[in-house]
Length: 81
Image 1 (tube, rainbow, N blue to C red):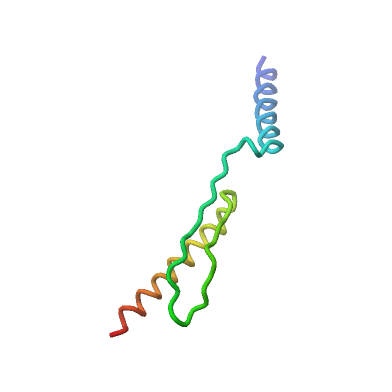
Image 2 (cartoon, rainbow, N blue to C red):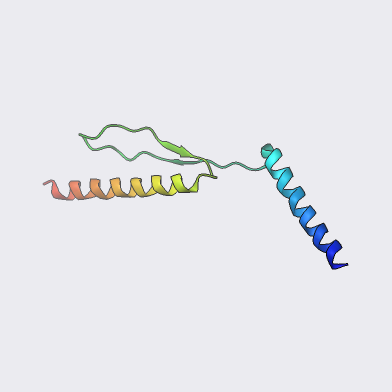
């Protein structure tokens, strides 16, 4: 009886995995866009970044880059008279 229940659970999880992988249209998709901060006068203008919800590593790196750039910009603005 335990073997049957184990196979039933494994089969159910396998079926769920299969249906999710082969029907991605049914999954909700959210795309995070990061608004570009105003570029300093000497910096090149960059387009807003968009990343997939599945690409969490790139999203976290993009966020770290944005925070770094904002910090640099604030430091430059505070040092200007």
